[in-house]
Length: 283
Image (cartoon, rainbow, N blue to C red; front, side, top):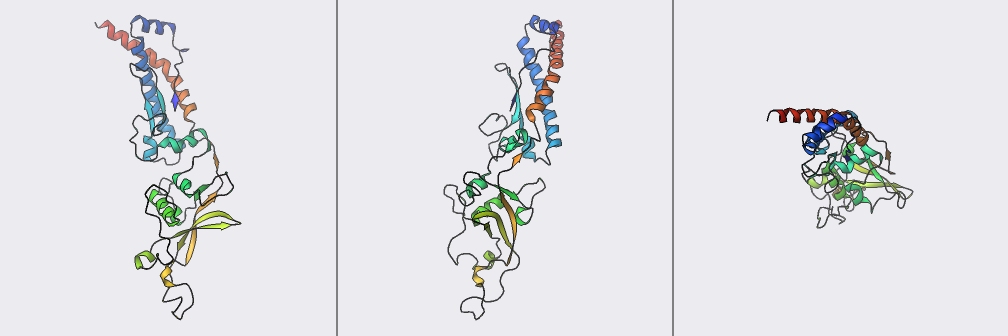
């Protein structure tokens, strides 16, 4: 979030005197702040589209402005945080844009996603070092038009890995040895598993390809995997498990917004003062 401190160095003494003379200094200040903030907010949305690759509608809507009122002569521009710094206009559903755009604005290491937090008990690269899931673009790791993996895919993966931890959740895959794959519907389902090397989880793999053919396994006279398991024959890597990555700032909101605000405010103050004087002359 960017709070704007009023820079009066470029406001002439004449303009300040005229504002005070009309007895409407607070009103002029409020109008100047709001007109400037509206223009800066519009410009920051342009910068967001220019600097961030294919931002979603949700992300664009998450860049909010807080305007001045009679009781509060201050303004701000920033992303919503869902109970945090700037929540005017936040609907309360979905992941607040500020939680994932903070790293784009300031750089550094992004926060863990909900999926990563729920998998933390099964995945560890180094004690205390954390990890991140990086989609490979293959299978379940395929990205949509906005460069994201659909939320339903993550839920399905968590279910298959028995990592869903929401209170009262019953969506985890069953654990019985023959409980999955006994029907045609279940044999068509996609299954996931963790790959590891040297005791470290390396990736989330997705089973692909055709299932087993014919009757196999114990008692069938044909060796091989029992048909009732139903697993597909091949697999691909859908997500790599990596160390936390550090990101450079791609959308330095604070720097951009402050510069734009300071460039516009003096002219807005003069225009508001002149408009107030013209209005006073009519009465």
